[in-house]
Length: 367
Image (cartoon, rainbow, N blue to C red; front, side):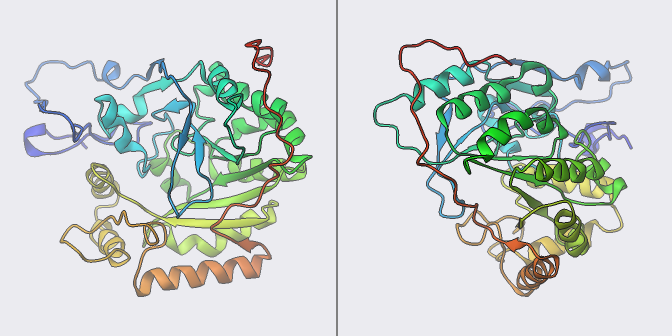
């Protein structure tokens, strides 16, 4: 589907989630492409590029009462998986990029992350608590296959016996089973596999460059059989879109060895409202109005565009009768499947931590 920008229409591009590249909320000038009849090199415009992210620190801290960790490490900015719903998309605005196509094609890699992490863990005042690895963007996105930044970070965590939470939708995590088993032997790791739907057509559009659901379930089974604690992350749960699959997804994850599950309702902060709405109208035009109405029904009606709620306590679970029914269905599905329904992450061992050698000798990064 293609129309000119003057008609405010987008173009569906194979392998991409977003349909457009809306300007970031911090930009002072906005460019509007116009089809003037001349040939445009669209392939060059959507090619995936990456550059180094020269960070001074790598541990990000938060004080959110909604999540079970207060620190995280993200090896990459932007994500090639292209999941159209990703709550991290608006963070690309801080880099002067768009929440849309830029987020999935202009990537940043922190190739010095492992040495920075080692330095921060060696600080005299550092107090150990679990680190969440790759929660903003996937630590196992395709670029990781060649750069191996996540594996380098895991080497540091293994060497220091530091607890870590991981979440991914990539089968690439199987590459690091040796390190994860080492951590699991002392209750130092928990892995969540993110699964949103078993509908192949839906996942192909929703998460165009991520592993298939069947492959993710196989990864869940592989990790569980290797003795690594695993969980299902049904996130996001999108009212009236993947909502009917709650019971099926929970049971499938349990069958593959997941010991617990949690969910989070779709969040649409800032420009993500436009990106997701465009996607919805393009791919599900007959259902778009009903789905948007369902999303609004679980958010407080503070304004006419209440597709998002950033308040602590309700941003992940929503409010109202539909949100309550979703919670009841999820709880019941977990009980039937025999797994824990727990929005809080499991307790990991913090007593085994041994600070890294502060001499500056870096011998961990063997790939």
